[in-house]
Image 1 (cartoon, rainbow, N blue to C red):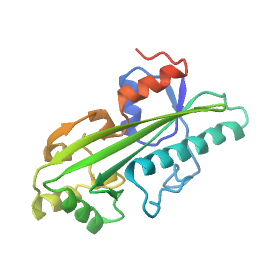
Image 2 (image 1 turned 120 degrees about the vertical axis):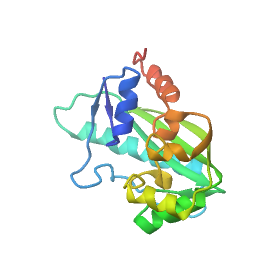
Image 3 (image 1 turned 90 degrees about the vertical axis):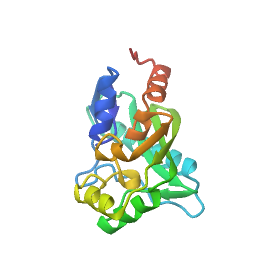
Image 4 (image 1 turned 30 degrees about the vertical axis):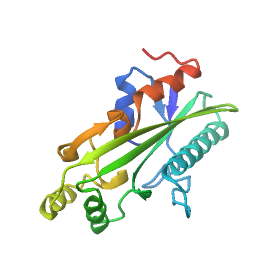
Length: 201
């Protein structure tokens, strides 16, 4: 049994897929219960450095939550973060509809990077792994982009899309980890958990 420091239903589904038993570890009340960490991109920060930093901070905040909460059993905490990058630019979660359309226009007809970092924290030990995949999008016209944004699916997703949803039809090619693009690379996750003595089928 581990704690999952994420509200993402996709990460919950993926952990369940590989038979890992977990308990959600929710953060402070509010619309973003995982907002105990600063996800703002620092000047000159590269995508790989960014996703590692944010994931590490999430893991630290989650572990401190376990330590500070009385009566909470100490178990390993798993956290993750996903970012999308093109030509060195980090394309995060859209702030509104125009921003989602802007991001999708940038990704249209291109190959971009999707990086997902996974971290496990337990007592003084910290382990982190990063999965990087290349995703090639078809060319998208304005009508197709507008219809997708209207669906509401792009919001709260890095790069303004979810490959497991309607945007799967945009993807011409993927090189790497499909589950990593979804938000939790299963191979890297299983390897990390095994390091902490957690049996993964």
